[in-house]
Length: 163
Image 1 (cartoon, helix red, strand yellow):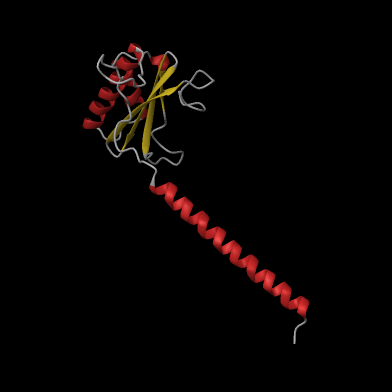
Image 2 (tube, rainbow, N blue to C red):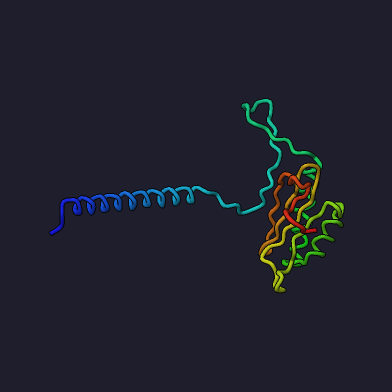
């Protein structure tokens, strides 16, 4: 036979276990809810400038620097043209195509095209520095995605040495 204290201790342990299971269940449900509401980008994430018409209701408007818009267009069209002829270009081919599109060589950053073990990478990244913006382009599985991000504190678009 067990003592009253032992029975109470077992009862508290069982209650604590139930609370832990309930808490864990709530955390899993919350994680699933958040995951289900997260959007996945499927195409180019470049946003065109929004302008308000005189008859439109007051809406926040975004203005894009014309130089950034021109560079974004150049990067996107260059990468799409390049991928059409070669879905997995190497680093130097990607750099040469962006420079040929009118982006200064000093403003172009390109990720590596091969791993240290000599394998092709899954995705290539290229960046064109324009003012305070980095026009980032990614080539993956023959597709192109382009987005505009702010320049890093280092004055570059990539973290580390990717030039």
